[in-house]
Image 1: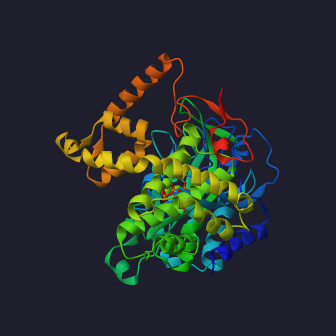
Image 2: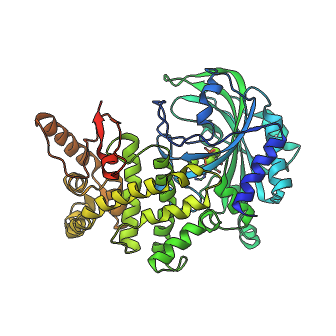
Image 3: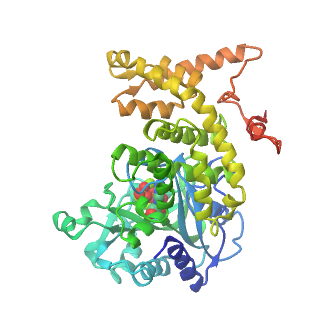
Length: 481
Ligand code: ATP
Ligand code: MG
Ligand code: MG
Ligand code: MG
């Protein structure tokens, strides 16, 4: 089954259960101070859960573009190293806004996985919230009893608050959840270790695929929980992980969701994917990051030097560095992957195809800007290796700041490079240097800025307008607010 068919079957299944199919909301959040990017399928529906707005339909299903690179859900550091966390991924979801509850939700998720997708029942585990005395929350007996009618009792696991009480962010709708995990190991591997012990244990072949959240509470700013006006269902299934399970692959990157991009990158780099671990990681990171960057730009967030824009610039610069160091691209390359992605998803997310040229130009200019300083920054790091070693294997704050300020290295990129050579960063030292810099620029009447430093990282800005002729102008025309 192709990934396109898998996605369609999900939507068709829930349409047959009375759900309205809606398009994905943009990945970029503009009007919610608690969230920069959509990080789950439920986020666009937050107001319906909170009772701020009436839901237009009682039952909805969709595939939602999600980004987990900041805030409570941040998977950036896993990407490339593990094979099932992405920065940008699709979350398939079905919702009940005050309509059906646990019984239907769990029954349907089981029916879809085992009867439509035909995943073997003895490869699945489910989990139920065990309760939490500190928060005075009960164990989810109801979910347990429902599962008992469908799956062997020894495949129902109890989960703690971290895994089985879902929260969107520091505040907002939340509730106990019940997850479904799949064991994709070979028979031989399964004979050695009981799959149960590997659930929620970072095993690359025993992964969580679907989460059924029972939205009952709102977490307030003072961290207290209050009951929502009604009970809702919010489910989220990782599309790329589902494809891995159904297509019998050992990695999300081996599915047809990622292979077109991976093969393109490998061909352009003149390498074969699967032959060298470092090169493979670089290819996976680039394939992952280009999705995050492309969809975010297409949805209206340009790379910049602050807030959401800087998150995107950081991801982009990580990708540039991987392609420069491990795939030997000394000239802009990442932007040429955009058409591969846009064509592949043209029927699902036409917004990327529609803006392909623009997205490509923005990425190309970002690549150009960083490639102007990247090599010298890396040389600087190399030259100082001995002094870092002498400094307790630590990159001092001054150097980390110099890399940031002069060479455009985001701190997390320097940390990533440091980690590869067994070094850490003096983050406090970096922050102190940053503070000093802020004070200096506050005192300076007018500061000169090099081409990639458009604004100080702490200034609030708003994108004003762009010149249709020049992408450069699009990026630099911000005004301070
Ligand atoms: P995990 O424990 O694997 O980090 P999660 O519990 O954080 O996942 P949920 O918030 O429950 O994930 O999201 C619902 C589903 O979305 C998960 O069951 C998983 O299939 C998928 N998912 C979550 N994070 C990612 C990610 N970074 N990349 C791809 N899929 C993801
Ligand atoms: Mg997670
Ligand atoms: Mg989890
Ligand atoms: Mg989960």
